[in-house]
Length: 116
Length: 114
Image (tube, rainbow over all chains, first blue to last red; front, side):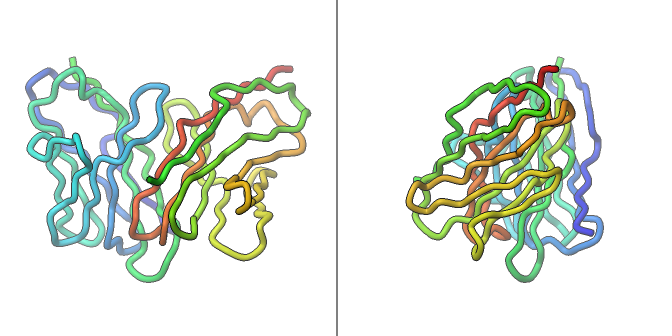
């Protein structure tokens, strides 16, 4: 149980295009999902916190108009990178937490974005 | 401010040797502590976690970690390393982990030599 999936696992796009990444909790309801970004050989940095049915909370320095996050249901959150540029190339990882009770976060397998 | 320090960027050990990866944290409340492993190009796999109780925590793949409040440490250990353990290891800290994000250390890359 407690499986989180991400789609796509890898995407290459041209500069200026938009890319949507999906994060799904497959067998549980997630009230909260987190989006992290990991640059090569670096640690994970939190981008935003997404709560179902409400606006995402972005970390300082993360452009909310560039990284659009939608958490429309208890099992799906999406991250859209708008007008992507090469510097947006990174590994994007989501995590999701249980609806009730304390527990660990469950991480998705990540999405490798390459912007040409 | 919450922070996690992993002092060792890269460690190389011989296969069969013991391993200890260091982790120190700074956290204002009772910390929830985690160790994750990441293979190249892959997501995170949880090795073990500490919420409360016994300060020596057993995890998967033969790993264990010990929470030492007085030292603000949560070091990861394995008595005998296998070549397949070569990966990046991240220590992380959070509050009530379900609804707050984790703060990660910069990671320690483990290389295993024959």
